[in-house]
Length: 242
Image (cartoon, rainbow, N blue to C red):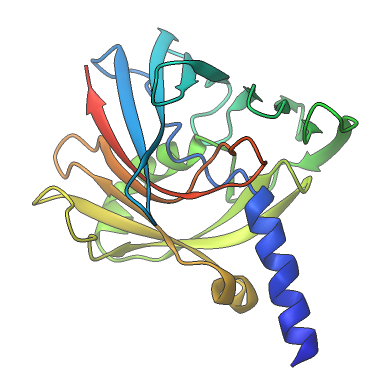
């Protein structure tokens, strides 16, 4: 029992550091809008925690600006879809604590650079491009590419790149019942860790899409950017297309 608790503790620590799927950083390539604003609320309290403003620089480049509820900007992200809509290059900086992430594909590998906070040293590594790999906002591209299969209740496996751990982790994606309060008629999917140990520590991530346009409407799960203490909170993000 002690081993199990210790293992669960390590998993919880890992997930707190995990820049989880960044589903909130979705693909804007080839779509007919120029800006999307996501409002992130605490699942626990309902308090507005931050906003993320997505803008397209070009069909293959996308930026995200993170701001506090009072409008003060604290973070930036840039995504490059030119190689792939499922395994994009990206960089992110969080001014709350100085955390930085850079992921770039070089040949058949990804070069990963990570700094946990301003006092931490940079850690650099590589990870091979493997079948089923998803990188950051590429999860949204994955959903859109395999929409027909997922909508037909096919469960699909992915290998998600976790920059903080310089490794990939196994998850599966499947259609699920939408959460209460989701727009009527939406189509929802759940993202679930393949490891039963990880499943003991966290709830599945749930995403809701417009059934016709396939636009992301809602994300419920662990935030992809931490607070000033370095903690990743559980959030409910609602999106507005401008």
